[in-house]
Image 1 (spheres, helix red, strand yellow):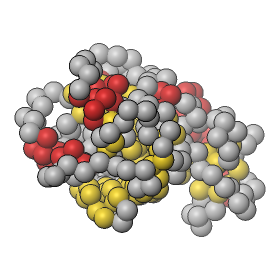
Image 2 (image 1 turned 90 degrees about the vertical axis):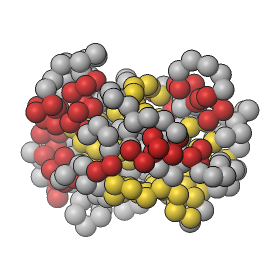
Image 3 (image 1 turned 60 degrees about the horizontal axis):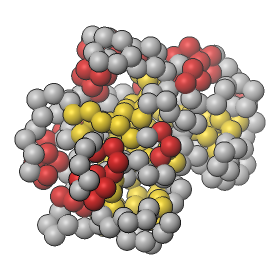
Image 4 (image 1 turned 30 degrees about the horizontal axis):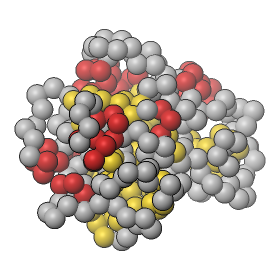
Length: 280
């Protein structure tokens, strides 16, 4: 299934994208997509519905983030071999974990608002994992059984905030609109081999990132298992799995986003995003 949320910010409705590309209204069938609303049991109840009988939304308008909210917005850093090389870092021996604040969540086509003081705004296309069941110290063999689905996330980063002020990376990752997510939450049966998905970013039509999830140092299976060694993952938690090479910080000379720049992000089977940078 491809699940989405449509409508004005703060008043989105749950929907399903059918095989003909039509949005069908899941209101009354599904709760909003957050927490237990994306548990494996909740998704099974949606599957059991005759989705073809649901009303078609002629004009869905704005597409919101595919999750209404996230309790935990978790991230893995330096998880693509070529990205680690471009930053001058040694590929890590264990996953590098950090977080984005949940308040940065935004829609896949919403504007990205540059915060005051921002000089080095950067893009990061990432595969997002949405957890579908309580997950505590799960084995790698069983880890994928806890996944509700996958989505695109742009881990928007302000490199000055991230690197010049000490401490954790979180402060450079968390401003409002720094978490475009969606357009769809796609269930694993439609994704297939999650370690063979092409992903890319263009800025103003120029390709900046072009890679494949087969370059990930730690796989989805390994990430979910590893995180669950240290924390209980819950339905609706969102995990960003790292970005490939081609970020602005890694280019020579470095390139950062300006007001009016347009980013387009794509991942096979997960759709695409289009966001414009605007001033505060």
